Length: 417
Image (cartoon, rainbow, N blue to C red; front, side, top):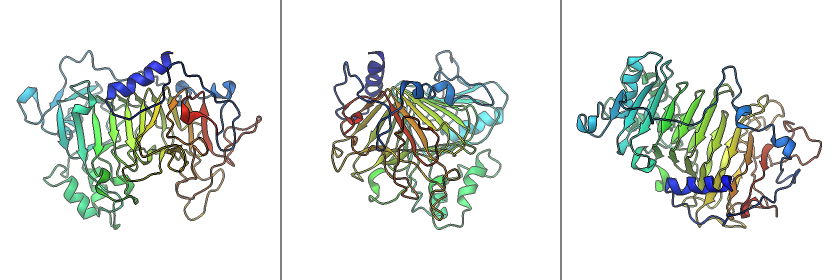
């Protein structure tokens, strides 16, 4: 019962208004190994390989347990709508990030953000100074970082006018190179990489009690409009009680080597297409994934592009998959995810060379809106049909098959058809 209670509590705590889930009190998983080619299920022995500790094994030891600010009596910097009110030292989080990097040192710097909505991007470049950013209110919805950026439509000039209208980024600032890398593009549009509202490159960065929104949302049609809320390029990053809201590509786990580790706990992610994607090694625990139909009546929660030599991509533990009323069993069923065959648009998928997304969803609740017939879709970029390995003697990393797995999930969406 413990796992069920935690998952339900996370949804209620975040106040997401996610719509009706299954009545899961006393629920027992009906998933049996090895499953089918459409829905492969791990055995108990196989599932033993996919633990939080395994995903976070690396060159440096890391055992994250969530972000704690309970002992912070005096933050280094405070962000508020007006400097001086409520102790605010800065009126924008970007200013406080710049100040933290300028302060330097190896002691963790704490930045408190007072309740309110703050318009504009936040870029955290590489730094040896560990930084924690947290909202002053435990209700993450009361403290928001928000901006509308469209990776498919915005030109570099539009990006510059949107992101830097009054000199938020100037030459010499620590985050200026990140801004300039997008503002100086010669392409017609800025693309996915430059569409993030919040962009983190700093090892050991922590975030708590905050909402990050790419507010493009439903102001566009149902076409391709990459609009990232949060992009993470760094290792040993923790997110705790955060809300990430967008539509396409909400949360970009952009590991540069495939070994970067990110831990997301007690959090909420909303979108409609590939809204948790990338090549990092990420563990989600006690989270809510909510897919919306305001732009589309089909969609995917995950799109990992794990490098083929990396056995660990994304791991989901004790979480809850929900959808709004526009999704229902049948033709409009939501899907858990698909692989992202990044870089293979011209060659097609090449086994052992092209990324082969790796994901395990275990001990989680899947609402009735999720497909029993085809929980996994054809790969992004190449449209490679999903092919799960249901052999009892399978190699879990065989590049001839997808690496999208489930174990011990429950709810109406977790049943085989």
